Image 1 (tube, rainbow, N blue to C red):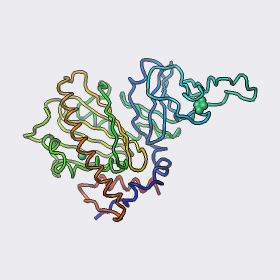
Image 2: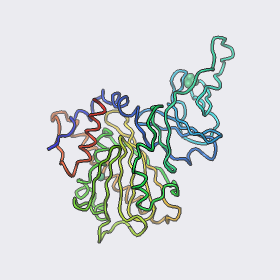
Image 3: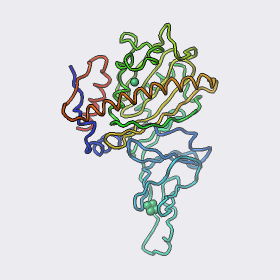
Image 4: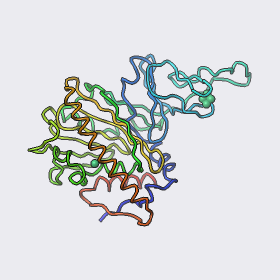
Length: 346
Ligand code: FES
Ligand SMILES: [Fe+2]
């Protein structure tokens, strides 16, 4: 029977720095969507894990990503998102072009020993999939498409065309638990029948119907609609739910019913806290009553999961038990996740 990670991994104050260096510094992660950039030149500030990044698009439509850290004395540079021609640091107003080069530093003309030339934001990598923006802090990262692999085809097979999706809203939340516990909770539906009565009334979560699939860069869960299901109107193009987890921290959800997709990352915020956001997208034809129904349905699942995961955090942080055990089949996506973690952390 496989064992879990050592439970100290969920509260060890030394681990976030190691995870930043070994995992997030080279991870592709969803950071936002194209509409946030405005029509022309613009930017989106985000985090990959806990690493600040900024994605820009210049006048010519060229997308770039940088570490969102001022080269002067290290302030986080940009906040939020929008249409802009330059990025100006809130600390001493150093101003960078959307190509990352330093354009102006106040008073620098009075300082003969100072030259803006050659100062530039540190580059990172950027990629898109339909309207979705991804960044990777590593400037030499393998292309996003290599990491997505078959994922776009799997999503397209539900009938959801990502190019046609329209952003509806962003749900932001935080959980008082280590990011890995939040990920692991997403990676099994063993708890669904016990803890998500509403969800389990719509999606068939029995082990013979609910399918788990692990791949090189992402894992997937496929849940068919219950024959006599109730709780969400599942009439529509999407016949089966899909829940994907792109290593190490991006989640993609598609529910049965009308055209819908939500996507967002888990963002470590210290050893025992996780920030997250989820961007909801719908087809342009999707009626608002159904959208409200889905948001309420998914929101309820989220409320239930927050309680579960915070409970686990308190238990594993008690410090007197070394580790737990995993069900080899029902929890095999967690086994896979924990193996990846151990490989990444060495
Ligand atoms: S830290 Fe950015 S301008 Fe000083
Ligand atoms: Fe759950």
